Length: 552
Image (cartoon, rainbow, N blue to C red):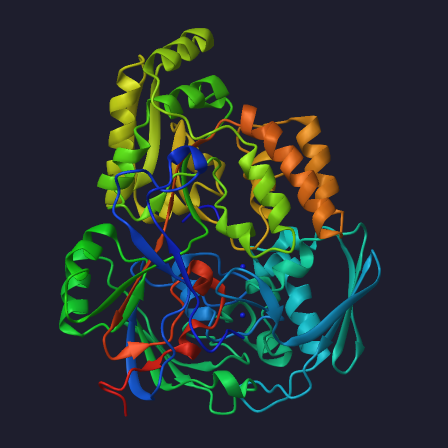
C-alpha cells in the first residue's frame, strides 16, 4: 500500500488488455472523445541475452534498498529485482508462489508457510526458515524503522517449525497478512548478514544479501546503482537474460527525453506525459501503456481544513471537468473512476465479481454541475474560503491538474492556492504532522500495493490509522472494514468491504481525480518486461532481454 508518491510465473505469451476510450465516465471508464489506447500487461517475450541495460529512475535516487524500508517508486523498482518475497505478484495483480511454495491454515488464527528447499543467497548460503523468521520479525523493531510495522499488528508469533517451514500465529484472523508477503514486507534477507550490517543494511555502504535474480554489485551515490545477474538463481525459468543492469537517476524531463531518444537510457517506467509525447512517434523504441493501480486525488490534511467537510469536496468534484483534464493533462492516458481506489486492484482477485458488483452500485462519476456545487458551498458555509493545496515542486502534472480545479473552484466562491514543496518536505508531510502546518490539502499521487482494496481504504477511514489526518470516524465503516480484515473467506470479506465502500463514498472528504495508466518505454532492442503497474513488486528485469536487433 502506498500513499505519498502516492501487489508473479507469467504466461509465456504476453497478455494484452485492450481498452477503448469510448466508455462513458459514468461507467468508470475513460472519457469519451479521448484517443484510444491499448493497455498491455506484458511485452512480447524476449529472445536473446544482452550484456548491458541502462534503466532510469525518473523519481530520483533511492535512499535505501532495505526491503523493510522500501515504499516508493525508485527503491521498489530496484529492490524488486534483488530481494525475492515469499509470494509473487503477477502482471494482472494476482498472487502466486514465490519463496514459499504453498501455504495453508490449520485454523483461522494460524498460517503455515512451506518454503522452497533449493534457494541460496548470493553468497551461496542456503535460505532457511530462520532467515524468513528474522526478516519478518525485524520489521517490528523500532530500530529497523520499517514502513510495514502495521502488518504485524495482528500477529502473536512467527516461528520456524521446520528447516523450511514457518508458522505464523495471529491474535485475530487477518486476511491481508498473506497478501503483504508479496511486497517488501515478505522479502527475505540473510539473517546473519543483516545482523552484521545493522542500520547500514540496504545502503550504499552496508549492501544487501538476498536471493533475487540480480545481485547488488555497486552503488555510486548520486551517479548509479549496478546489479549483475544471479547465474545460480533458483527459478531457472527466470534466470536473467541481461548480464548487467545499471540504474540512473535522471529526473529532468528534457534530459530524460534526449537520453531515451539517443539510446543512452534503454528504458524507464513512470514516463512523464510530456516525455511520452516526444517518444510516441520515435523510431528508437516503443512506448507502452499498461493497466495501473495508481491513483490521483485531493485530500484534506487536517480537521480544520475547509475540505474536511465532505460538502466542500463534493462541490469541488462537481466543478471538475474530468474529461478535459484527462485529455489535456494525462494526454488521454488515464481513466475516470468512481472512487480513489483503482479497479485494477481487485480485477485479479478471487472475489472480483463481488468487487465489480459493489463498484457498479456506486454513484456515477459526477458530470459538471456548477449550480449544485454552489448550493453545497452555501450549505457548508466554511469559515475560510481559501484552500492551500500542496504539490511537489516541479510536478507539472499535479500543477496542471490543480489549475483545472482552481478554475472550477473560483466559480463557486473558493480560492485554491497552490504551494509547491521540495521533495523531502512533500514526502515527509505524509508521516510528520508538523510539515502539514499551514496546508489545507495535498494532491496525492498514490498507488495500492496489494491486490485488495481494503488495504488502502483502511488508511483513510480507520480512526487508528496515522493517515487519517481529519479524524474521520464512521462507526459502521470501521466495524465493516475491521470485520472484513478478520474474515478469511474471500467472498465474504469482499462483501463486507463493498458495504463499507458504499458508506464512506458518501461522507469521506476526498476528491477523486483520475487513475493514470502506467507508461513504460523500451528501446527497440529490448522486450519481455511487464508493462502493467505490477512491476512495482515483481522481478520485472528478469523478464527483460533482447529482441534480436542488438542481442549478444
